[in-house]
Length: 249
Image (cartoon, rainbow, N blue to C red; front, side, top):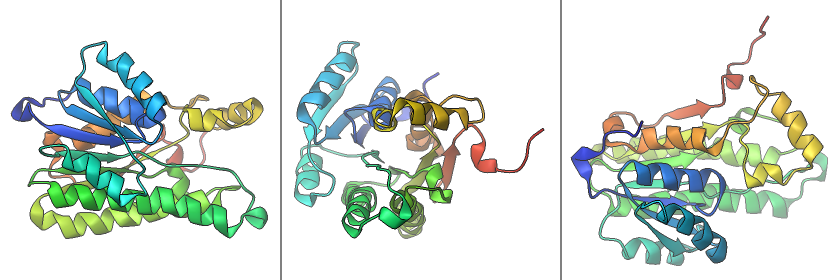
């Protein structure tokens, strides 16, 4: 059931990484909740094709093409809108590399997109937000650790720390900053792994199945809602309970 957004019928949400996966699911969910949504991605053709499908269902969505690591393109997209009430920083990258084979270039690129890209988006959004605004970052259960992707773990742990720091600085302005930490989710990014690897990862999940992007979008919508304005600085793990750890019988 959509969250009640009747108190802000003209509310505008901005979602990056919007051409596929969790970002696209967040665009659809927020639009169904009554937001006017700006969907942003650097892949123009894929973005337009995905959003056209959603628009055909009557959802209020516009597109913006830009790179989250390019502040000028972020500023240009934001300045075209009269206001911004929710920023969802869903753009991100992942790749696999054993620790002893991981190079500095791959490490820097991961931090550039996942951390600095999130910082640029959140900072520019905060500069334009009024009291009651919401910033939602996307971290990961991977922030707790893992093998073969130390650079990704480091980037997502940094997103959690950045989220807390931004929440502390922005709370006097009544801007809420929170993070959603998905577990293993069925997206084009995870499907880029060999099928046997995807299947093995999926079997490690508590229910033996990856989360759908819609499940993650539900959590994003919760933290972007006007009804959650008193929640800030939190990281919400959406992973079927796997992050609980422990032994089960």
